[in-house]
Image (cartoon, rainbow, N blue to C red; front, top):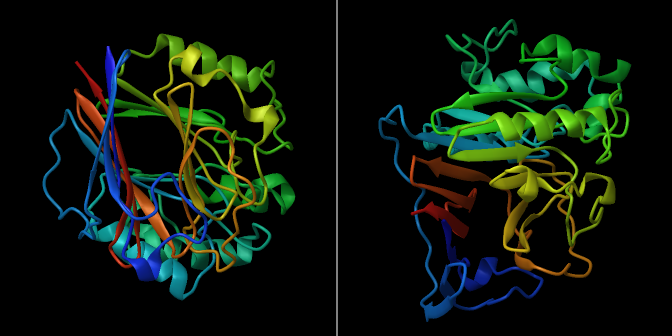
Length: 319
């Protein structure tokens, strides 16, 4: 049985979300099991991100960055806080290279900030990694030049590189290409969806994370993408992480977590429109990234802004 533990931490008043959340002024600790729910309010808190520490082989610490790929002060601030966590790997949820996914901009938008995680790295900003520790997903802006060929040439990723999977520690990761230009399509009956269903069913990892650019559910500008509302939970996934809307949001659909994480560096942060059913936390006031830690017994998802404030924390635990 998986048990869900929720800690929602909001920043100080100066950084409070502009859109009401489930609890805009208090930290709430929620324990969820299959049959019970308990809510206990406590005080608001601001924390410093977790310090670097050695990561055992049966655990993993990873960062997730979305809609980040534009060189400048916003991306620099996000990259600084992400690297302060000493993550084992970095995932991205798309829009890696603004504005049009061109060869001329890709290294300054990615390699300048993350070259030490990329293998093989052939850019000009320093040494690369000894093994690849940077695993992006395609975004719509990455497709705008030559059907994403600059992206495909820049990275060396598994499988067909547009969608792929890999295992790191106790987590099996599944990168999906959610763009409508995907040759294998994006609907529930697509070849890509069939691949995901088969790979999820075959996985023996404790945690299975699906990540992509377009959000299946979102309360912000672009909204929910119906074509991506696959039965991830039924197929065996533990959570879905996406971007595209330049906000942070956590949504629970039938108790299953969907995260929208699009505050990675684009200066154009979006407004929320109307909360979708299940929306738990909505935040847009500063850039940031997700820090996720998993071992054989639990996985914890956090969103931390560039000021070091913990905006949200959500834990899934296995008995």
